[in-house]
Image (cartoon, rainbow, N blue to C red):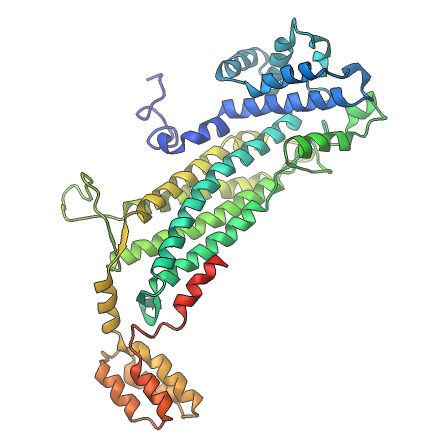
Length: 457
């Protein structure tokens, strides 16, 4: 049982669902973290060498720059294995990266600058940037899956924007809508949260043991260290410099990102539950999959398992995201290590989110509207026209219109004929009366079809 496989993995992320999150392995794995640590160390070294005020680091030739950069760009699994072997001796993960790079420099023309690897840095300088890069890269993959879900919902909403459906508030029949418009509500909500996610640029720091550039300034007081660090953080990696920190970057940006993703996930949970309910009441059906079994004992069943799977995994993702966002911004005094082990679980939250998106995508690809059921429910809900009737009565100054319609319709089975008789007995302008008489539950949808098109604005 020493080999990791779908049958031996403890976590379903690395077991049952491993194939669904394969792209995340190079981002949130130990390899992914080490690879990005190497990239940060190399970028910092090159920045030091490029600054004329740091003479001992010396200017690198174009070929030397390319050769050093290649160490980061070509970093492979064997390199990570070597670093882990060094760590088994040092018992320090970031120091092992430093020693690996110095080892890699031996016998090469730039061996003379090896002591500027990790110069004036604390481990957190390297780690916080590596984590920020992991989040940036992982987010690109997750956002791609989120956009697939949103795109399917958008297409469904626009296609069915004028298909009438009986709405349900508190589970009871309510004013009609269209099925497309109700899905468009989710598209709008998901798009809004996506904008907030995309607006977040991960913060990072590269300012030493307690954030004051102490060691840097003691060695080279004439260097503008905040500006040099900014060049690496923002210029090389496209992150955002945090100017004031303790030993650690404060993780507030991480909390913002995790909360934003969690909100997106919560909206998808809401969608999953609504789709599940529409399937349950027959408004939506599911395309059968050849060979798929819905129940081990009831052959007729086609269960909404994709939406259930999505909901469950979103719950797991949000549980982790919420712990991360609540815990990470808190650190005792200038530094404690409670964030270190917690940060290693970022990939789990992203993994569960990605699995959930793909499950929803699969489910959305199978749903079909049931026009007959939609029409039948509307035909049996004439009482919903009490709303427009009493509204037109109000417009014309009639007394107690709400109470009159309540007396007629509340808890009663109302037919088309009942509604027509009530309207005919009203003293209303002929145009208003004709408009009310022409209404049916299927046509009483307001401007739902036009509102659906707002998702493209």
